[in-house]
Length: 390
Image (cartoon, rainbow, N blue to C red; front, top):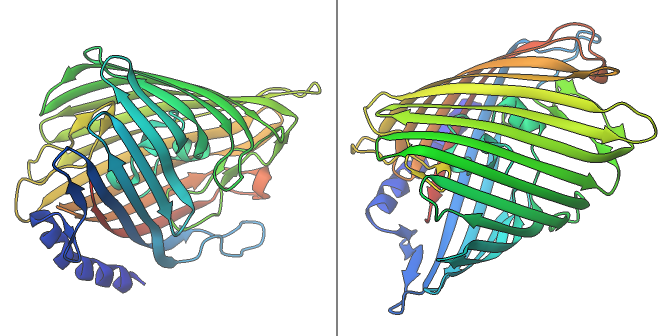
C-alpha cells in the first residue's frame, strides 16, 4: 500500500525542485505581473495519502473490522486569482476530491481593513481553519474535527492596522455553493500577538460563533486522527430541535528559534427546544514541534503560521508530538470520549512536503455507535504533498 505514496513522492520531487528555482508549473509561469501592478496567477495543493490500521480496530459487539487500509488522493485543489493594485482581489477555487473551496471577492482598504464576500471558512477552530498545506500533522486534532463548521457563503471583515492585534467578524447568510448547511451564522475572532519577530512569536486568540441551522439539527462526531476513514468512534447522533449552536475556541501559539508549540481549547453547545436539555461538548489539543535541521519553524502573519522556508538545499526536517482529547458525553447524550497521541515527522523540500504520523487512539464505550467496550486503533499514515503559487 505504502509503495504507491512513495512512488508519487518520487515523481513529484523533480518538479518540486524546479519550481523552487523558477515560478513555473510544467514550464509555464504560475503568476504573471503586469506593468501596472496587476497580478494573475494560479495556486495548487495536491496530497496523496496512505493509511495502515492495526491494534484493537474491530467492533467489540460484532468483531467486524472498523477500519480499512487505504491509499488515494486526499486533496486536489486548484485556484485561480486576480489582484489589482488598488486592493481588489478575486479568487476561484475547486477541489476535485471534494467540491468548491474558497471563492470570493476581496477589497483591502488601507484605513478600514479588508472586506470579503463569497464562500470561506468561519473563524472558530484555529488548527482546522489554517491552510491544509501548513498542517503539522495529516489531520487536525479531535476537537477541531468534531466542532468544525464547513465553508459558508457570507461576508467578513478583517482589521490588522493596530500593532499586535487582529480583529475579524463575519456573517454567513446561507449554506455553501453546493446547497449544503442551510442556515445563518455570526462569527468573530480577536488575536493578540505581543511578540512578532522573525524567530520568536507569541500568539493568543479567542474565536466564537453562533449558528442557526434551518433544519434544527446539531450533530458532533469525528473519526480518529486518520485522513482516509469516516468511521467515528465518538458520535452524538443527530440532536433534533436545536435552535442554535455556539462554538468557542481559545488559542495559544508560541515559537522561539527551531521550537514551535500550539494549543487550543474548543467547546460546542447545542441549545434545544421542546424542553430538551442543552448539550455541551468540549475538547483540547496541545502539540510541540522541533526543527531538527535548526530552521525557523514558521513565518507568522495575520494571525496564522505559514509553512517553513527551508534554509538548506536538502530541505528541513521536523519532529512533532500532539495530544488531543474530546468529550461528547453530556447528560442523556452519550457520544463518547476519546484521546489520541500522535508522533509525526515532516520533510519540507521547497514545494514538496513528505509527512509520516503514528497515532495511538483510544475511545471509551459509545452507545451512539453501539460499541460495548473501548476501541483503541493504531494508525500509521503517510502523505506526499505538492503545492505551488502564493
